[in-house]
Image 1: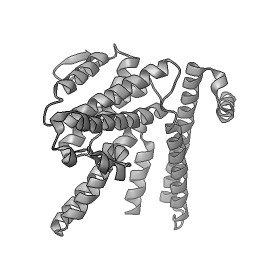
Image 2: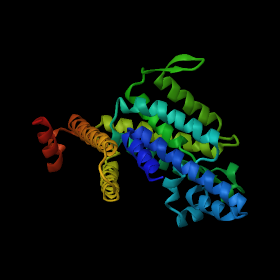
Image 3: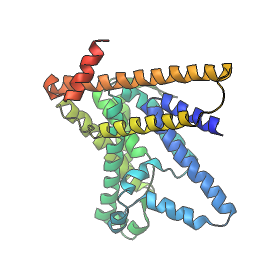
Image 4: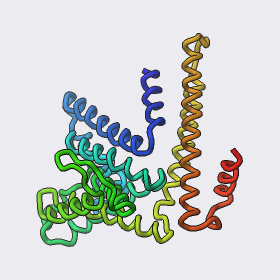
Length: 306
């Protein structure tokens, strides 16, 4: 079991940021599916339902007041297999396109911004429009759709003529695809999934606003740098934990495994260093060298000497 966990963790670390977010979404979905099956077999479904209700985003402000974290957690929950399949497929396709124009830091920031703004659109819509009277208290939002729409829209603003090959439709411009998605979401605002479509519009707005502000030299995703540092710190701690619990003589097999682990760690460090340099160069491009911190200048100097 420890070997399987170690291998899964290695695969997770080896993925780019898009893959990591897909892993996280799928893992959370599978955990709740397994818990749901076990709860049903044990005849204790209600506790699982209550846990989910505390993580999904409520439309009622008085409920949101007592679970403010749900504005973040809801975007990592999914209601069905088809729901997560579509969202993760879209995230995989358009997330990779996004990374050709933006950095890892931007991806994290835009995903979260899209989810948060989409969630706020959902809550505001249910408390402004009379159409939702009587259902606000019982309405909740889950899913990464708003976050994915933010990724798509930000990429479309940066490169509107980028061609995407769609099954059955052939090549379509990225901006055309983004506009169609927004228009369809608007036309479905009074449908059964009205709340989800309001969230889509919020996510698209967040992605557009991020791209426009970045062109003006203001990066709205700088907060995600803290998350990257926290992840790197926790990853190093977990690695040291695995090393401490490694036991037994170093046979030829374990020596090969150690070499593989060493190669992996070297590649991971190299990728992390390259990502940091990309972020710094992007910052210089937008705001000039004088906007760099002392640590960023030192990192750039060290890289230039290698």
